[in-house]
Amino acid sequence: MVDLLEVEQRGADDTRGRRIARWLLGGILLLAGVAHLTSQREDFRAQVPSWFPFDDDVVVLASGVVELVLGSALILSGRHRVLVGVIVAGFFVAIFPGNISQWIEGTDAFGLDTDVKRFVRLLFQPVLVAWAVWASGASGLLSRRR
Image: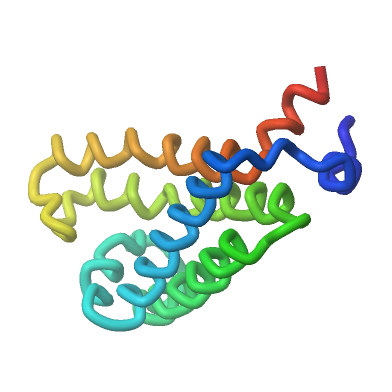
């Protein structure tokens, strides 16, 4: 198994394109985090699954803070960008049940007012995971493992 710290020490390829992609994703996370705490708080509450055992508002506020931290970390990550990328990808996987719940429960939010729109949105979550992995250089973990 490839050691994550070993990959970071060797230095994953941090091209200009990856850096721009990482900063852009970090900026998107920062904007989303601010939106969680302010103007779109109600829409984000609609994504918290009805079965989730915590108060919707607490979940939205906590995930907003997490997005602010992760967005900042992506932008400032430097030599730890691979680790940050893995954490961000994991975060996108962890919040995916909320998107599935919105589709299954038929909850309108963010202009997603039909089952088709809510389903199509599900297809973009893997894109976010791949973006975090590629932009951080964490994709090098897979190629070094082979």
